[in-house]
Image (cartoon, rainbow, N blue to C red; front, side, top):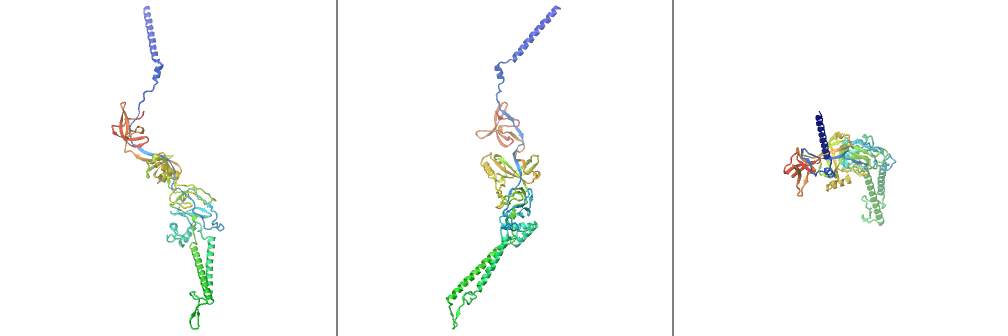
Length: 498
């Protein structure tokens, strides 16, 4: 029994020794010197950064932010005064031009409509390319008169022949047109009536002077019908020369008679000239010609009681357009007629087309003093471009790729943008697409040798090799590649960095 216990004690002792030895070995393996610890934290040797070659369709686009606006903005101002008189004593004619009925923003203006009222008289809209720059009335002729006659006929007021000469038929049509709008056409002013009376009196006075002179006998014995002085007849039936006194009187009388005739002719000419322009007129400020109607009163800068001598507001067409700005590098990829996808902030989409680039796309000037449109100096057919935008476009075309370029996009059918005026939209222009699925690599993988050849570096089995390629379409940081020397397949690893 004691021998068995001794064996058990010996086994336990041996086991304890083994456990202590094993623990010491394990502890020893966990102990490192400072040098070993530093070596363990050293970064591994750097290697190339690679990306797998992909096969996919590629679409290149130019993306920008734009603003929805009404097309063809034009400043609106009157070409002259309403009324034709110079005195404020009669019916307000010639008084300071005050707006008595202001235009209303958002109104659609059609041909023949009343835009506003000044001093109680209408300002009417007509279609035509020749600006209103003068009063039109009897005796006037020109393209502006022909334009007025054509407009009157379209409105159902026949002026007679479309001759470009303002005559009685035109005056009657104008009067009927004004009446249909609840106004009276501009008749001769008090000053005109007074001047007509004075000219008529001048003609009567000249006629009276001629009669008086003609009936007077400067020689005491009268003159012959031809105005030559009478001669005396002697006893033998012959004639004798008049006395010096009677000959002088006859010459004086003839001079007086010629002068009276000339005065009458001048008086008649003055009366005829004035009568030719006397009658129903269209004052310069009472009609505005627009190249295309209808138009939309987009902004109004005046109210009732304001002076009508400055800018009135802005008119546009009813069509929508989008104004955007793109970097010069992107602008070089764009062309007129390119299709555009427009996306609103709430996801609505509409189609558009690039209609202008650079200086041609600059918005029209609409600030104070602008005369682009129905302005005080006439309405031009082309917009005045922004000098700054034009300069930027010029910079871009001369090689400054970072210079912004103005872009105008037409919207043939407003559709989803109908209520989005002045809203921001995303502009997406597709400039190209790959022919199906192609091999693509990141732009960072493209390398150009000193000889101008393009290549990519491919890692295979831990080794790098060059594969020469041609590049195609690029989009979203990727570029289409085709191998020209060596092989390149989907899944190959190309180097994009070290």
